[in-house]
Amino acid sequence: MQHVPTTAGKAEFKALTSFRGFAALFVVIFHYSGDFLPNLDFAPHTAFVGKSYLWVDFFFLLSGFVISYAYGHQFAGGLRWASVKQFAFARLARIYPLHVAVLLGFLLLELARVPLHAAGLVALRPFSFDMSPYLLMLNLGLLQTTALAGTLSWNGPAWSIGAEWMSYLAFPLLALPLMRFGGRRCLLPVGLGILGLAVISGGGRNLDLTYNLGALRCLFEFLAGMALFRLHASLQLLPLRRDGLTALALAAVAGTLHFDIPDILVPPLMALLILALARNEGTIGRALSWLPFLRLGQISYSLYLVHMLLLQATLTASQVLLGQDIGRLLGPGASLAALLLFLAALIPIAALLHRRVELPFQQALRHSRFARVHIYGVAAAPRAGLT
Image (cartoon, rainbow, N blue to C red; front, side):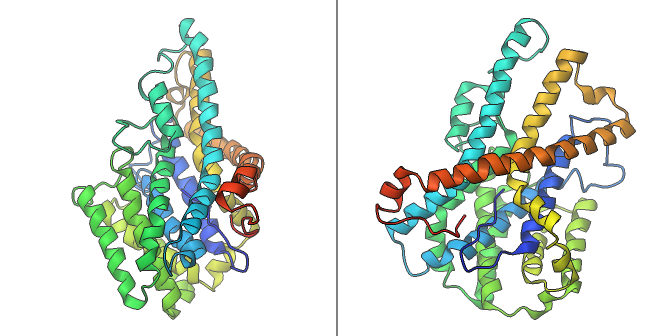
């Protein structure tokens, strides 16, 4: 999942920024209400929570849309090595510091488990199975969605960061033809992206593809998101400015998740939702421009990356103190209260990481001597408004 970049002189899509925060929360609830809180079972009432792994598809579509908005013009006229290099470095500076910081947190937790395992307080041997040193190296290299890894590992949700990095590397080549597309021609890449999803998911019933085919899942949706931006930029799409179509798109996405409709139908509806939110000039757009919602969207990358570390730290502590996972001791009501407490704790943790890791390390990398000399040239500097 990814941050919405902005350029100096370009307006931010505030509704999309805010909604990205809600999508991140849906993914967090999906992970927290599974094995962690086994007595919190939403399935008899709705499939929405159990299907919320599909909000990662929203992130991939949105990433293609906003990356095209921020950077597409650089490659519309052709490929220049300087532009490719600067784009790739800017994206790496954006995603990598927090990724490494959270991996460091997992590493420290795993080291803490060594004496605990020796004392018989935790069962699973540290640095084994999905927490092996080899898989750590793959995660550090953003290679966790390649054929080199056979499982989700270390910070499981970060598989999507490795997948997005692959799409970033493909972006300049994809932008070369796509940034010239206009009108209904843009629907062709969207259709190709959906077709690709159907192929890799065996007909589209289940798109929960991560370490195995996650890079392709991301690439197909990133491509569709790029075409969505061209559709947005080249057509008036006047009905999308009104609340009615935005509300319909929201209801359609929520309904497909609630009623457990085959996964392949969800990304096209999410694509419509992105277009509607980007264009909305009504009450929904104004509501999503509310500052607390914007702040939630701005910290969504931290929220997404750190939530599993908080969960694993809690599980380790409960195994030491209680002899088992705490979630198994909680009834439905207590489990729901625990979920709300975790969300309440997670948001300030994510805000702190956003302020102390994401932003300062991104800026430090982009203004480093290495960047000035090898990326931007001695006399050049990264443009102030691009993040």
